[in-house]
Each structure stands twice: as structure tokens, then as C-alpha cells.
Amino acid sequence: MNYQDLITACQQDWTDYTQHRFVQELANGSLNAAAYLHYLKQDFLFLKHYARAYALAVYKAPTLADMREPLPSLSALLETEIQHHVTYCGQWGLTELDMEAELEDFGTVAYTRYVLDTGMAGDLLDLYVALAPCAIGYAVIGEQLIQSPATKIEGNAYASWIEMYGSEDFQQGAQKTITRLNKMLAEVELSSSRGQRLCEIFKTATRMEVAFWQQGLNAAI
Image (tube, rainbow, N blue to C red):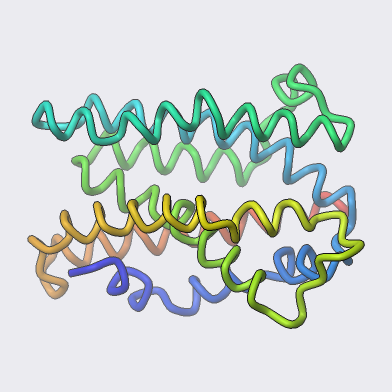
């Protein structure tokens, strides 16, 4: 197997995720500000659980080398990415205390607990597959938006979001995730029960991403 097998197994869900109306409206600058603010606050809460998931990867790792492998991602989340998110949200009038006090929306609870539960019940590969739609999908979305003629950068309030996820640094980070995942998946036959279970995990996490976008839109109704 490789990561593309996971996407192919849930192609419609993947398309619904990477081409969601939230993303399209963000790209052309028409996204309702209330929807975006709700997304930013929920994404802060999501990132905290995302960091916990990488800490869980250290716990689930069978060898010392495997334990060291997720540390750069965990460190980047705690020391850089979450702080960048806090700084960015400050430009939208949101403080760290505001976001810490925010209640988790249903989609945030469902997604984050699914990832953590999958990691606790399964092994390291199960956990990485559950994390993959976020790590890989945002890079796919960023690249698509940067290259799309429909994307509006000048005068778009969401331009910095597009530029961040379409940046070379973020794309390189996603490629490292793909390389790690492919190395682990290479030992699994797609048609096996193990392979099908991994496809199911990836599909469920992808559906959770769709719901995460949708809860942002719903907040503006």
C-alpha cells in the first residue's frame, strides 16, 4: 500500500473535503467572517488535541527510533504552529484566553476523540493513518488554491491562510508525512483485512474533516 491507496478508497469523501464550499469561499474571499472566526477558535482546540496525538505516537512507538520520529512534529506544534495560530488569531481580535475558554463544537469533539481513540485502541500505523487526512489534506488544499485561477489573493482577507498552507515549508512538511506513511504502509496488502481497516480509518477521519469545515459554515447561519 501507499498513501494514494487510502485516498482512492474514499475518493468522494476526499473530494468533499478538499473542495468543500468553505474552502472555495475562503479562496475567493467570500467566506462569511463569522464562519471563519468559528473555524479559527475550533482549530485552536483541535491543534491542542493534535499535539496530544503526536505525544501518543511517542508512547505507542515500539523502538527508540520510532519514539524519536514524531518528536519534530510534536515540538513544531507546541513551539511554533500553535503559537503562530495564536498570533494570527490576534489579528482577528481573538486572544489565547478567548480560545482556551471556547466550548468545543460537536465536530471538534468527534474528530479529535476519534483520532485519539484510534491511536489508543490500535498501533502506531493506525494513529498515523488517522492523522493523515489533516497533515496531507491541508497541503493538497493549499497547493490547489495557490495554483487555481479562481483564487483571489489581492484584497482577500484570507490570503495569508492560503499562502501559509500553499508555502514551500508546509508542502515539504507534508511530503515528510507522506514518506513516513508510505514506508509503514509498504508492509500491508491493500486487499488484506488490515489494509481495509486502514482505509476505513482514513475514510472516517476524512469525513470528520468535511464535518469540521461544515460546522464553520453552520456557525454563520
